[in-house]
Amino acid sequence: AMEDDGVIWQNGEFVDWRDATTHVLSHGLHYGSGVFEGVRAYDTQKGTALFRWEEHLDRLYESTKPYDMDIEHDREELTEATLELLDRNELESAYIRPIAFYGYDSLGVSPKDCPTDVAIAAWEWGAYLGEEALKNGIDVMVSSWRKHASSQIPTNAKTTGLYVNSMLAGEEARRNGFVEAIVLNKEGNVAEGPGENIFLVRDDEIFTPGLSESILDGITRETVITLAEERGYTVHDNVSISRGELHTADELFFTGSAAEVTPIKQVDNVTIGSGTRGPVTEELQTAFFDLVERKTDDHDEWFTYV
Ligand code: PMP
Image (cartoon, rainbow, N blue to C red; front, side):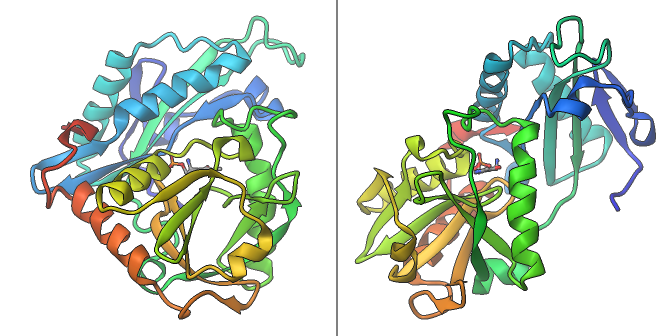
């Protein structure tokens, strides 16, 4: 269970954590009609800072578009609310969860008169897949579930309803003794993890499935592509990756706001490369953590200081 003290910002007000509730007939609960973000604030050498907050806000507003949802709070208000939330909850580092969903009115599938409810919560959350995972990598399985095709549901919008697919894939993996899943797309190519993008290293070049592979356009994905290119790597970010190429990779790793940069050491019990965090993964992981902890001063434009 989560800590339940502190405050949550809900529809323009700060409310006690336990009072941040919603009606059981909310549209979003029945039909998955919510959009959300997962953002980290890091305890940096220059104080607490939101990492790539503007890009997360862009994606949040963009995710509302296919659903014709109107967040009646502008960027400034959501930014102010989040900074105040960290302050009120005395958080030096945090995982931040903004969410907007169709709320309570009538229960037809059409959300016509439903309000768009908006909330932001923040709490301390360590390494998503564990500290040990960051260092030594994780064992994953290719899920028997496929990703939604982008012709079936917009996979580039971060929609709550999509995550039953993530839950099925992740829980299938955990029931089978693995830490996480890799999910193939409808074509059978590698898409992503349940909540992570995936990267492959082979012969010192880097590959990641293109945006047309039914993936979320990950902000950590884009960050890692940038960091890799700055270090002289060739990054192929518009390719299809077949299942078999996972096994023959030199290195594999996941990226995500929650998962950060997590090495993958086995897929379906097949050892990847040397079976531990590979050198390219380690270099990019170090670059990532040095960046977000502001041990370097590059890309200061990616940080919103509290
Ligand atoms: N894919 C999926 C399905 C996700 O849920 C996430 C987490 N938001 C990601 C990829 C990684 O995206 P980001 O780096 O923006 O967190």
